[in-house]
Image (cartoon, rainbow over all chains, first blue to last red):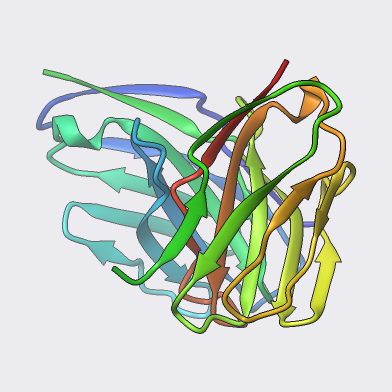
Length: 112
Length: 113
């Protein structure tokens, strides 16, 4: 079974600085998708960014970007110019044929 | 607004009681699923459905039952609540491959005393 590992239970960043959240996954498949979800205190799960495994180019959405290393099975999230509203739990997720697996999450604190 | 509607948002049950968590989506998604979220464990799949009349077990199905009589609705039933089922529950839906991710409901915080 596929597994997703987030090795950082908690991270902290100063407002306006950059932070990187780590994620590794285990799979024998070649065709899959990876996601980062944000869960603020409201509990809503919000899709932040998506990466297609067959694309080498790293996905970018405004201040959010990923470093996708397929051979290393690594999928880190970089948040640039951190804002107070970025404070949340962040979940890395892997999906293949609608089987979505989540990491345990990283709680990000943003200090003013 | 289009999306996944999940009710109730909060619920307290006594051990042994039964209840149904409701989930409805209006995006004509074939795939629907239920997850539970526990601290330090991420989200774990309980049951899923790839279409009306078709359901299957996920990672942690024990103590839960589902049915899918329509494309829109996918209720989750707790047969006899136990304290170990205290958790936050999410319903999600997607197109069949899920390649654009899941749309989640707002979650239900369930406490079993």
